[in-house]
Length: 426
Ligand SMILES: NC(=O)c1ccc[n+]([C@@H]2O[C@H](COP(=O)([O-])OP(=O)(O)OC[C@H]3O[C@@H](n4cnc5c(N)ncnc54)[C@H](O)[C@@H]3O)[C@@H](O)[C@H]2O)c1
Ligand SMILES: N[C@H](CO)Cc1c[nH]c[nH+]1
Ligand SMILES: [Zn+2]
Image 1 (tube, rainbow, N blue to C red):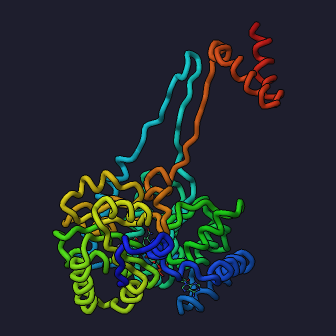
Image 2 (tube, rainbow, N blue to C red):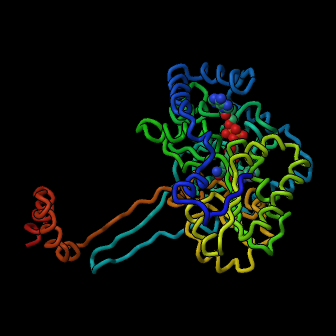
Image 3 (cartoon, rainbow, N blue to C red):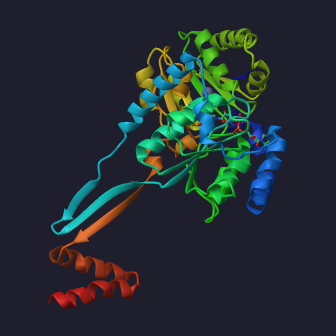
C-alpha cells in the first residue's frame, strides 16, 4: 500500500491520494456498456445467451429458474442457520424503519398528508462474478418484502450458486433469472421474452453493472435505480493504540472483493503505519484470494495525519462506503463524521458483520457518493406521495396568497382556478 504523510502533500497531491481506483475511469467502459444494452434491447433473450457464453463461459438453456428446482436444494445445516440468523436481524432492523403516514392540518381547513406505497415491480441484482454474494439476496429481498413489493425479480450470473437460490426461496422472491452483468440490468430495465421489465433496479455490482444501472436510469423508458453501489471500499481511522492485526484484517476484507476495490487507512504515526503494512503482508499470504487482494492494495493507501481532527477531515473528504473507527475516542470521532455509507465503531465491530448479519444493509454508495446518497433502506422500496384536502374555509384562508403568487409568476390560469371557486362561494 502506498504510504504518504498528508501534511507533506500540496492540494493537488492530496486530491490524487484520495482518488478512486483508475479502473473506474476506463474510457472504454461507457461505450462497451451502451453496446451491451443496445444488443439486449434488440435481440433480447438471444443476446442474453450470447453474453452468457462470452462473459460467464456458460451455455444458457433456461434463463428463468424453474421453481421446482428450488425445492431440491440442500445446504449444510450451519449455512442454513447462518442465513436464518442474518434474515432475522435484517428483518428486525428494516421492520423498524416502517413509518406511519403523516397528517398535518397546516391551517384550519387545510389538511396535508404524506403517504407511501410499495414500488410494484422491483429487480434485484445479486453479484456472482467473482464470489456468489448470498448475503446480497437478503439485503435486497428482505426490505422489498417488508415494503410490500408485488413482483420481485432476482438476477444473478449463471450458473447461480445453490445458496443464492436457497436464500431467494427463503425470502419469497417471485422470479429468478440467470443473467449477470450489464446485460442483466438491460434485461430488467427493458424486458426480454424471459425477463420481465421492472420499475426499479437495486443492488451492487462491478463497474459494468454500475455503469449499466446509471445508463438505464437516464432513459425515461428504462428503469429507476437505487444508487451507484460499485466496487467495495473501506476507510479505517486508527490511532496508535489500535490492533494492527485487526486493522490489517479489515483492510483485506474489502480488498479481496475485486481488483478495483480500495482500502484506505488514516492513522497518526509512521510507526503504526509500518506495523499495519507488515500485518497486511503477513495476513495476505494466508488468503486464498491473495492475488485479487494484492491488486486492490496496489491502488490503496495509508495516510499519516497530524491528529484526529485531520483524520476526520480526510475521511469526510474521501466519503467512504464503509468507515471503521479504531481509536480511543470513537464517539468523539463519530460525532465529526459527515460522509460515510456505514460506520463500524470499536475493535469488535469488523466490517464483515455489516456485510452479513448485524442487521444493517450492506448495499451502500461508493465512489464518494456517500456525501449525498444514503445506505439502502426500506424507504427505497416505497414511493412517497402527498395528499391535500381543503374545506371551503381552508381555501378562503389561502386564496389571496395563492392568487398573488400566481399573478406574480404571470400564471393567470393558476390564479383563475382559485378565483372561480371564490366566485361560487361568495
Ligand atoms: N457497494 C456495495 O454496496 C457493494 C455490495 C456488495 C458487493 N459490491 C461489489 O460488487 C462487485 C461484484 O462484482 P463481480 O465482478 O464479482 O460480480 P458481478 O455479478 O457484479 O459481475 C459479473 C458480471 O460482469 C460482467 N463482466 C465481466 N467482465 C466483463 C467485461 N470485460 N465486459 C463486460 N462485462 C463483463 C459479466 O457479465 C459477469 O456476469 C464487487 O466489486 C464488490 O466489491 C458492492
Ligand atoms: N462488502 C460488500 C459491500 O461493499 C458486501 C459483501 C457481501 N459479501 C461480503 N461483502
Ligand atoms: Zn464485503
